[in-house]
Image (cartoon, rainbow, N blue to C red; front, side, top):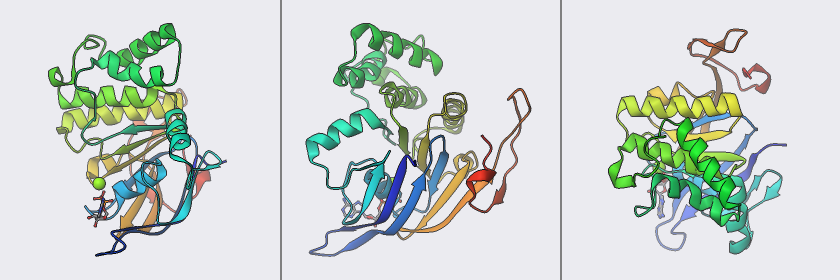
Length: 255
Ligand SMILES: Nc1ncnc2c1ncn2[C@@H]1O[C@H](COP(=O)(O)OP(=O)(O)O)[C@@H](O)[C@H]1O
Ligand SMILES: [Mg+2]
């Protein structure tokens, strides 16, 4: 079963005044364990598509299915609860709660899920340690660099153990060292813990790191390709990073 499946989704903003066709009949499926990037120029519909997939906004027509459940048309309360347990978000502007520490920002979503205090504390600690923020757990967002804030945001997205993480231009506000560091972390989580990531970007260096690249133009999918970007030796150690493209075929994916 696919984790995400869109059927003919279209989005028209301002339908009654000056209609803007942000998405046009998008059909796309993501499988568990994918590390995919949506690319396209500014205004091509990347954010709109991620918002539809994540149930943050509703398509004008078409349906979105997440893990076998059609979320389009779901009542708001049910959708909020569904998102809480199934979808993790990472935003371009981090969207951390300023008065909360890193640990509290990561813990909050687990509190909403009603998990046990002890479990919450342990998971928040483990996640922050994993992204190299073990010594910043009590820092507030204003006391952290952009790269550190975005690493907290990745921990927050992972904390709820979602089916997948949507990241809208996660590196757009980071310098290149911080951007590559964030990508390393996301890639490691994908490879070692099989976390499914769908991110958008228009940064070519970020695009190169994706296994699958979906290109949007004027709200429509122009191409959808798997890149054979990484090769691994038998022990699983990283040995090379070549980028040759192949036609969309799940069986060609390294896994
Ligand atoms: N809330 C909105 N109201 C009206 N138009 C919007 C809104 N959000 C996005 N748009 C328009 O929809 C198109 C796609 O935008 P967006 O999804 O943000 O693209 P991208 O993320 O690729 O830059 C653009 O023309 C944009 O101006
Ligand atoms: Mg955008």
